[in-house]
Each structure stands twice: as C-alpha cells, then as structure tokens.
Length: 178
Image 1 (tube, rainbow, N blue to C red):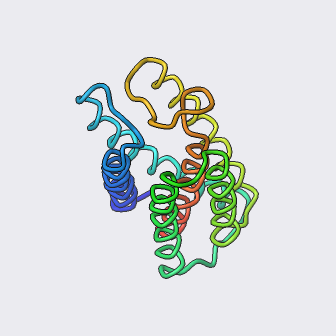
Image 2: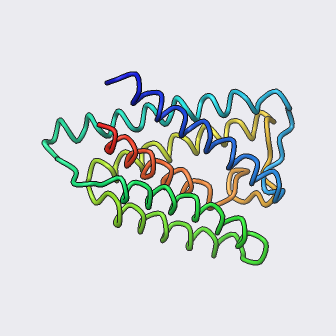
C-alpha cells in the first residue's frame, strides 16, 4: 500500500466529487442548504475512493483473482463513469425519474459487466451504494441539501446507481494501481 497509490486514489475521488457537485449544482438537480458543506463532501469522497480501491484490491488478493486490466481499460471505465453522470444530467430534464432509474441501473450494471465481472466487485458496489444511499437520505432529512426532483425517501431514484457505478470506477483504478 504505497503512499503514491493512496494519493492518486484520494486525488481522483476528490476531483471527481468537485466536478460532479458542480454539474449537479449547474443543472439544479441538487441544492445545498449549507455553504460550508462543500469541502467536507469532497474530502469524504477522496477518502471513500481510497477505501474502495484498497478494499477491492485486498478482496482480489484474498480470493486469488489476478485482474488482467490495462491502463486503457481503466481510463475507459473512468470515461464511462463520467459519461453516465453527464447522461443523467441531460436525461433528467426530459425523462421521468422512474425511466431514468431504469436507464441508470442498466448502464451501471453494464459498467460492472464490462470492466469488473467479479462477485466481490458486484457485492462491494452493492454494499457501498446501499450504505451511501442511507447516508444521503439521512443528510437530506437533516437538511444539508435537497434534490430538485426528489422521489423515494427524499432522493432521486437514480442516485444509488450513480454510487454503484462510482464503486466500479474506483475499484478499477485501485486494481490498476495495485
């Protein structure tokens, strides 16, 4: 577990959190009620990226799985993650939230199938997206932010699938760096 690896994972999580937060604010899909929360969300995303990248690499080592992944595959996974988020932003304007959730779930599982295909990757993504959804629901109920098109439990239905694809992306980065 080198320091450079941790720094790359943290930086990727931190920067992508800032980019996605700005995209959500620009398209008015998420409204922050407290201005001071921006920085700790980016920091927690960076630490989460380090956690996900390391845990998936450890699970691979424990199960004896040797990923045959190149830097090109990892960059394609990162591009797919960014493309999925941009597609959600564009489709959120014209598509119902249920249709958007179906589209996002299909694309997220397609990302897992294209770039991971392991049971440990699937289960880790499912676990982290479930826990992350509960954390976001709690933050919405505490009044930190609101979703513009809130559906179930005060969040958008597509949001857990964004977290799922995030785990697939940072798992791929962590595997590449290990």
